Image (cartoon, rainbow, N blue to C red; front, side, top):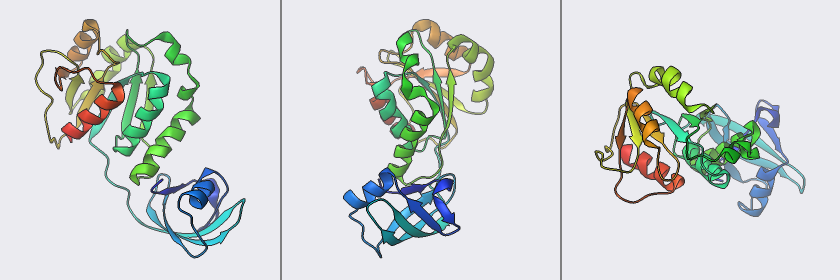
Length: 235
């Protein structure tokens, strides 16, 4: 945790917060904070700044806070992501939040097992928890917009074209396709499929919606690796 993220409920005054949860434990066990120490903080959806530790007890800590720094800029990206395996989903959510993805659309795919959609990790609070962990890692305060689309064809045909308008549409997909571009500064809509990639029918629909396949080479990557590699290469 490189940033203590503060919720509205933590504030007892405009410049005072009380912490009693895992953030308190982290301060005690990892930061080994003591009264008088200064810590980096951010308010979810707001600015970042400094906290002065006024009081530290076993069950709670009181901090005086001030905010004067904007969070880092987000990537100009909308990420379409086929639902990964539940355990991998948590890691991917942290990764996209840490790397500054502002909008994530979780979609279905033929190769996504139906049971994946039953995971408790898709509950809004579970998703938010993983996104916050990513923000804390990267020192950011702004949660990505997160959309779930369980019906692939209606989404791609009816809503995706408007979403991709004015952006460079790309499909991360193994095969005999052009290499993924590098170092872009324009808005991008990027679709990343399940392990093994999208099926041909899905690639065809995505292409009709304005996206073009690109590849990173002959190797088949895990979803979490592909996300990191593609974002690092694009931006």
